Amino acid sequence: MAIENRITTISDKDQEMLYLRNKLTDLEDRSHRDNVTFSDFRNMRKAQKIRALLNDLLSTLIDHTFPPPLEFLRVHRGSALRKGLSGRTRPIIACFHRHKQVGQLQIAARTHVVFDFERHEICVVADLSHDTSDKRKAFLAL
Image (cartoon, rainbow, N blue to C red; front, side):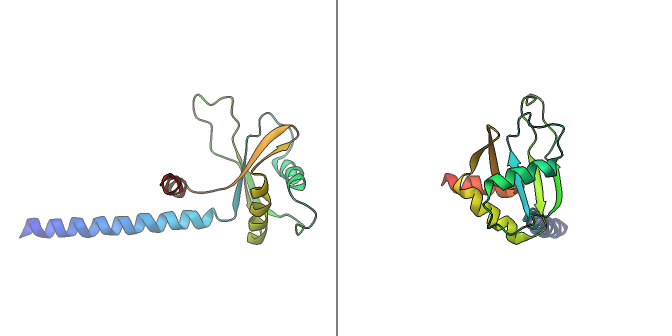
């Protein structure tokens, strides 16, 4: 009887862990909702501030009908480089103040996901958690 109780307890805890893991993934995705990732900035204006660089970049990407001003809550470089990737730069992650601007930027970026900025190809994508990225890759593979 004691073994059956332990098995039931372990099964209950396993279901609870799965629920908490899904909840954590959902919270992480919500925190990434207003983020946009800009990648492939190779040796571009190292001395310039990231916000000024993004303002210049976004002025080339979007037309003048985009509602000004673009307000960022925070702008920062992505995660640290791993060994063997010394030639690559870290992506810039921008969190926009207005969620509506994120949607409009994504629509504008869909027309040219990779575009030229000062003779560099810049990629604009949504900032997703690793779990969500893996799920999308698995879904697209079907």
